[in-house]
Image 1 (cartoon, one colour):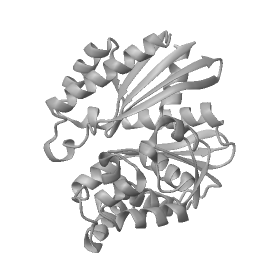
Image 2 (cartoon, one colour):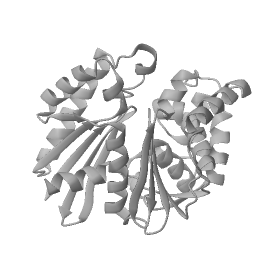
Image 3 (tube, one colour):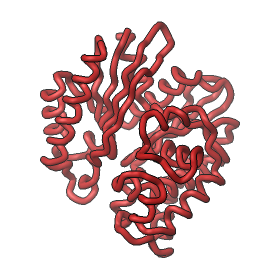
Image 4 (cartoon, rainbow, N blue to C red):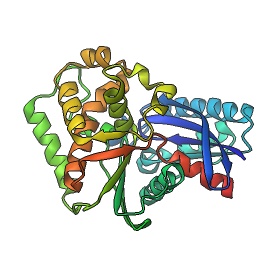
Length: 309
């Protein structure tokens, strides 16, 4: 069965179209549009009418694309920005009307469940002890696995866009050491309750993970994180050492230089050093030195669940 999943994240809106046969999911087409729905939420509590209009138009185009591709079912979900913003219901109504599909708003635990479901479908659930994490624009989901079973999961209010807004890290100039120290303190305060994972395997997903993996895989030219390039890093291993080196380098240059260096669009380039620092501190806290990259995020799980309905 051909189905489609549209994920309205706090930073990007992502589309995956896939063929599902039994337990197998084959993604045949994917795309993402940077909208930064969560950009104003931390400061104003609102997504805002312009962003809502852009989201509705983007979902309408993606839903049309999915129907033309022969999809029998389409699932549209919203995450942190949609559930936290005071005008989240307005977003939900506008997107549902424009796309012709009811939009669901996921809880943090729903997201955590879909992280494990997606990894299970795409790569097979780790049979030993493992930790899965999804570093998004406004939240981070963490799932612990033991003997192939989920034993714990949580969602934290930590994300690349959220932290960048809170600490003024979207400016054109490189951040000072005092700003980075304050960022580290904010991250540490949220991660303090996390116990070291004590695992042999880790799997990471989310925009920060995929962008850093792409830069590490093909050098400092992400070519806008095109879908063809992103598919090439699915399943690769990203070392913590590489994350630290990339984050330090990205943090040391201006936003303009960062865009020239990486080929990333402005919205992604502005928050990537912040996301890299969050990923760095998260992996240190969990005690993992590398992670396998899962490029499709929660969407593989959405596709599998949608076909099973």
